[in-house]
Structure formats: C-alpha cells, structure tokens
Image 1 (tube, rainbow, N blue to C red):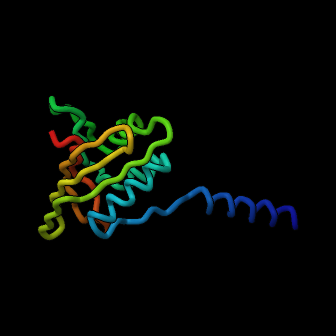
Image 2: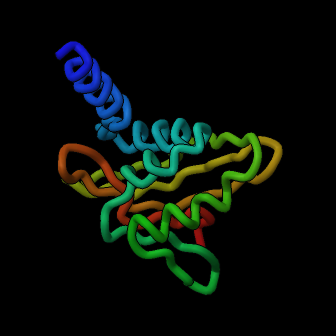
Amino acid sequence: MKAILLVFLSTLSFLSHGAMDYEKPQTPSELHQLFSEYFANKDITGLGTLFHDDAVFVLDAEGNLAKGKDAIKLSLKGYMQGDVEMVTHGTSIHINGDTALIRSDWEIPNVQTGMALEVMKYTDGGWLYIIDNPNGF
C-alpha cells in the first residue's frame, strides 16, 4: 500500500512540475517584459503564449509572413542562437478599447537592434500579439 501511495504522489508531483502556468500580460508593456524574459530563457512555449492563435509575424520586407503560433515560434527560434537576451521599449503605445497599436525599439545587445510595429489585442484576460512586425517593414 505504501508503494502505491508513493508512486501516486511521485506521479502527481511530476505532473504538477511539468505543467507551467504562464502569466497573461495586463498591459502592452508587460507583454514586452514577458517576451524579454521568455526570450532570455529560450522558453519557446512561453513566447507562444504571447501570440493570438491567428497572429502573423512579418518575416521580411517582401511581406512574407509566419502565420499562427507554431510558425511564429519556429521563426523566433532563429533569433535565439547562443547566449542572448532582448530588451524592448515601447516608444509609442495607443490603446483603443481592446486593441493597441505599438511602435517599439528593441535590442539584442551587441548583436542587433530594430524598430518594431505591433498590433496587440486584449483577449482571454490578457494582451496578445495579433501582428508583430519586428523590423517595422
């Protein structure tokens, strides 16, 4: 009986540590902070929680897009080579109800800088990217 209880408790403990609850950003700035945190930790699952299911990620000046969370997560992996972090500063945030238009400056220190144009939507209790144009094309 003790062995069965021990196996049950071990399984329960494993399952509780295996599932992670991700925060729902309550402001566009908080979404940027979480993006930076998940990016630095190479937490691709966490990054995926910041995008709406139907979100698009602008890949280049020709207008190629990554559509949907899975494609966006795959695209973001390309930026996470080596020991990198990303810092984002919202320079212009305009909110109209549940939709926000943001222009932000970002930096991967000593690697790359950029200016992003973003559309976010407040849905399901938090802000999510709907359109992320990381290079402002």
